[in-house]
Amino acid sequence: MTAEFMGKVQKRMQSVFGMAIASCAGLVFAGIAHAQAQFGALPQTDVQPGKIENPVAVFSGLDKITGRIISFDVYIGETVQFGALQVTPRVCHTRPQTESPMTTGFVQVDEITLNNEVRRIFSGWMYAASPGLHAVEHAVYDVWLTDCKLSSDVPPPENYSGPAIRETVANAADPLAGSDDGITSPGIPRPKPF
Image 1 (cartoon, rainbow, N blue to C red):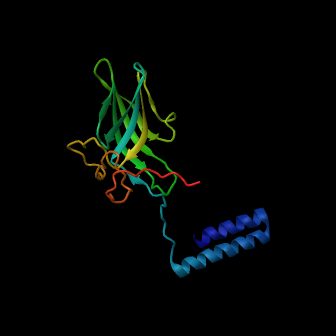
Image 2: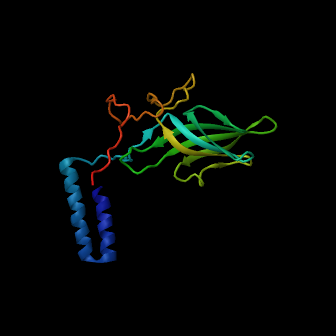
Image 3: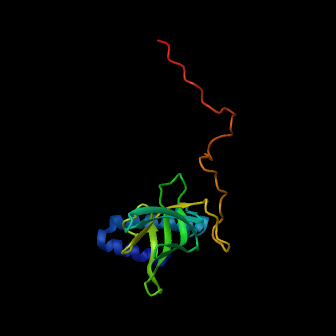
């Protein structure tokens, strides 16, 4: 803050609130100026909550003719066709587990018309927490973002150049569980003595 700016604010406060409040504001500005002089200018930081850039976006698609809902994984930058729609996620972000969940993705969706022309029908952010607000609603097909993942059972495309992919975990394996202790069955519980 410059001295000129602080002087203008102090004069404005004097005219609006009177001398008592203006003098308090002057003391606050003087304290800020003293701190800046002693410790140097405060750095301008853009503080954003931590976000994780994921390589895989998970979508759900509704075929309105058959009534089937299908879940499918798409790598960042990859284009996948769902019915007459081509879905291409550009980014997919989640937050760490210690923060409140917020899954977002920037997605582009094209429609293949009956004349075999490609027409962009959606280009924007999708929010997994609000699928009704930012879903693609087509006459026959609907598509919405449900999640972002660090790995997928589907192999990445050959020319994949997005965020790093974490190794896939075998189905039904718990990555947080400890090593196998060799016990195959938990045993039969004994009845309580009465």
